[in-house]
Length: 252
Image (tube, rainbow, N blue to C red; front, side):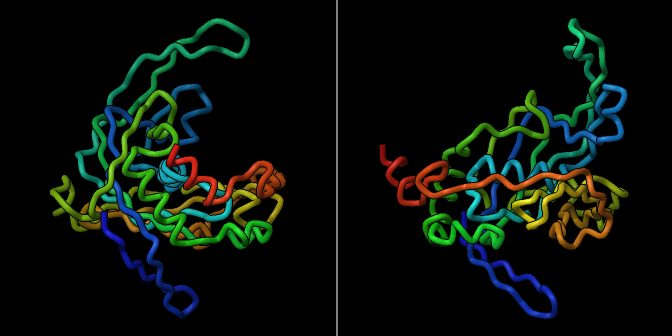
């Protein structure tokens, strides 16, 4: 894995980050379910992973409330193909029912992401050490993540390993442009926005030559408030360990 310098233009000025990671994530099945199909209990996967699912994968590699991960781009490596399965989920009233879930089959993606400090967590300023967090994130990526990797849902196990974004051949490298219509982008949580509410985001992704450039959460224009919620409180030494403790933990 290489240290990438990622440049973004925000409000007319350039912003440069040198804490970007790129990795390969793959698995036998994935289910990035469309919320519309959940009403009847039969889930149907989107053709591509959602921003929120990719962010969850990155946070499974390494997560701290001190920082926020932003997914910059995803590259589709394998052909998009689906497979339907008969599932017997447990009903709330007891017993089982029969549902048909449609999964993505044999998936592989290359993902590029970077982190920024969470400005809504001023109490964690003492934990802001960019070099330390970046080095820990790289080591966790090399080890397959701090937590289990799931591709959209619990039954779809995934695996991650470092890579150079753009290397190798992809199934859609010669596809000039492909739009996937309006789809779910993610949920904005209180500790990320500073507001005591949950906001659902939608967007229209477009793939160009196999790569989808993901917009930042604040750039989404299709929004809907889902409810009220307060951010969880963190305190160093009580329910949060600093980077020094994490480094000592790794040596054990």
